[in-house]
Image 1 (cartoon, helix red, strand yellow):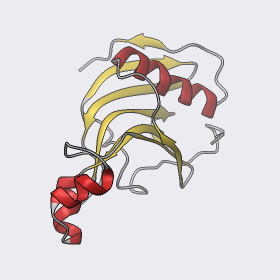
Image 2: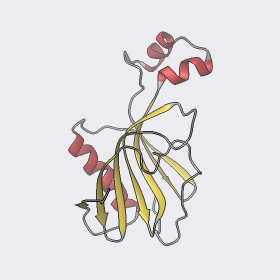
Image 3: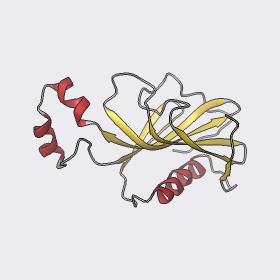
Length: 153
């Protein structure tokens, strides 16, 4: 997904599975004129969503929330009652012992959702942050390296 920040519209209210704008923000970055918020275990923007968002970044340009990149996992505890299938059956179907499916990477922007498939990277949080930030830089063709900033609370 390649986006022009000046032409990309807000994604607020478009996708229920994006991280809520200010939910669980643990770091802030600047890359050029983009503000990037790193979220850990964010709530989704919509209700009745059947995914968990362990890691994500949201991008803000000129005060608008225009892009999100997330590592998401299907929440089997939420899916089970919705489709009437016992959780143990879902665990077998998904090939997992826990309550979540495998981590998948999703990008949201300009009215579109793009799935990049299963996250193949390391579970080290710094590597996850670097991966998500690299998705932002690639999406916006941004040359400036992200710099962590302190945000007034």
